[in-house]
Image (cartoon, rainbow, N blue to C red; front, top):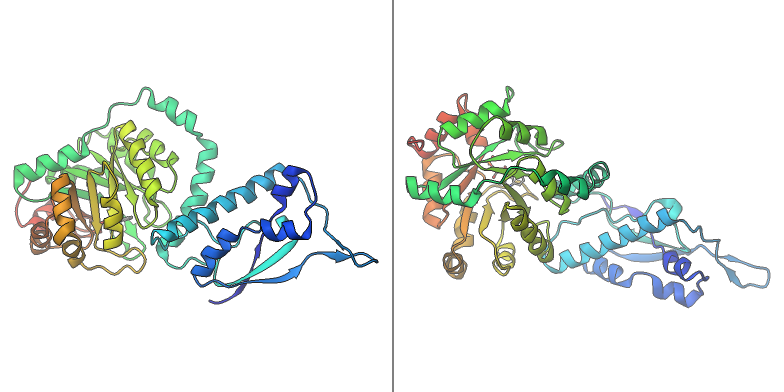
Length: 398
Ligand SMILES: O=P(O)(O)OC[C@@H](O)[C@@H](O)c1c[nH]c2ccccc12
């Protein structure tokens, strides 16, 4: 795994902007030291290996000509912003990096080369791999559907449905956690869950079986979901509010989800720094969407409890970095002071993943959840509606 990867630092932007050649000291100063510090903290070694300078006859160093190219400058800038993002995220305990570390492509090399000793362009775990893939996917999609076209489409969009209200009502009606039933064909940890997968049929069966809300996976590569599924369910007359189950890394995706019929979106605290969560929950409010903010450990829970205006927190019992499932995670995160704050703020907590039996439901309810998010155990049943009855140990549709 360990490999030597060249990190190309590119001090040229600043110089070309000033239209002047760098001298040696300015080159050194312009290397993004904050980025290097962040990597050092992460145990990544930087070693300057070769100055790409040539010597003139009298021994003075010359710098190769700088190619002034706006596109190059933009790419490099984007990369620098990505590095800055990783640094902020790391300071909040977020281990998922938004982009690979390898930097701009080879021909953007500036006068210095740096070498980092780690697997900088290899994702450390599946969540990181998904996020890197999503980052590229979103930047391509954005080019085809720029934000202003989405905003235009939303001018005539039908109103959203009340996702949080539906969960509260279901909880009051049944005395059990409100169910968010997930339309899920596959996952990286479990493979294909259901071969004969008709999303609309499954959604209808869930609604009939008493689900309060539905969750529809839209990631294609890793979960075999799609935005077409979300749209199809929405236009088939299903009344349950719909959660767009997507890996959101860019606010553009929230607008996109809304144009495809979502009533709620997922924001993953293991991926998004506090500022992103704040900004994105504001956008959700503006668009009439609920935000389900997902946490999976104490640190993420504490970060999210520190953010104003959060109504819905999901505790994922599956660690998205290791796939390990442990439903006692829900209990642990709701104990003591944290549970107290949640009750004071009247936040609805959703127990997510790994719930299969009435005992599992009773266990997370006892821990303090008012809602659950369930996929595998019900989507696998030949009649997913009856699967709900099996999960709760009783018919919750009446
Ligand atoms: O199929 P399960 O174990 O019942 O889990 C459902 C849901 O919690 C899970 O799909 C999930 C929770 N958080 C996520 C984030 C992304 C993708 C998927 C998920």
